[in-house]
Length: 232
Ligand SMILES: Nc1ncnc2c1ncn2[C@@H]1O[C@H](COP(=O)(O)OP(=O)(O)OP(=O)(O)O)[C@@H](O)[C@H]1O
Ligand SMILES: [Mg+2]
Image (cartoon, rainbow, N blue to C red; front, side, top):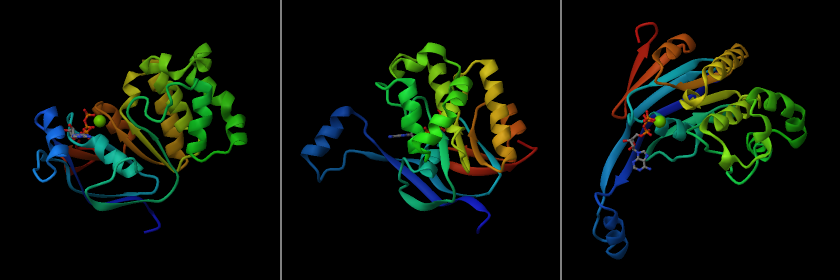
């Protein structure tokens, strides 16, 4: 068990779907009358990821990829099943999550670095490297709400990969970065892999998944179909 970084056992997640916005109100007023339908976003997903492995997660829009990552990271509770994560996890989830829009980029670096487990002094030590990697110039001292999508991702990725994570989770976000930046990100992911970092990587770019991942998990309507390399 020591060698398993992430264990996901029989995870299911259902969301409540309302046909009309007014149905939510009806439910508040008439709590005995159920107004929603259950929507199954994940069905009985199980997977064990050995320490140091890179797992690609693929599947069409709405197949449950982000839901699964959020459950692993702990920002979403499953409806049933268990997850176990061993090690410090650093995640780059969908755009802007984890950033306070009113704070400047610099303040967000400190804010996020501390959430991810670094001390102030450690962040100060690494600050110049983080700023150099993100390379967003004067915007570093502007509020994050003024950032373009690419600027957000530049800074968020720079922080997420500078905290010595045991586990790195990247949800597609990189797609909004320009080509040069994406290349820089992939070489950083590779250097974390070389240091033994377990990596979860969601992408619609099949060639990147083949290149970067040891194994791929295909989700289809919330069901897991595991495919091994190289037959993606
Ligand atoms: N809070 C929510 N309430 C209701 N339904 C939700 C909620 N969050 C996600 N869903 C539904 O769960 C399904 C899976 O969503 P998820 O975001 O995990 O898909 P995804 O595979 O990441 O898609 P994409 O490739 O577009 O990012 C979708 O049908 C989505 O509409
Ligand atoms: Mg998603």
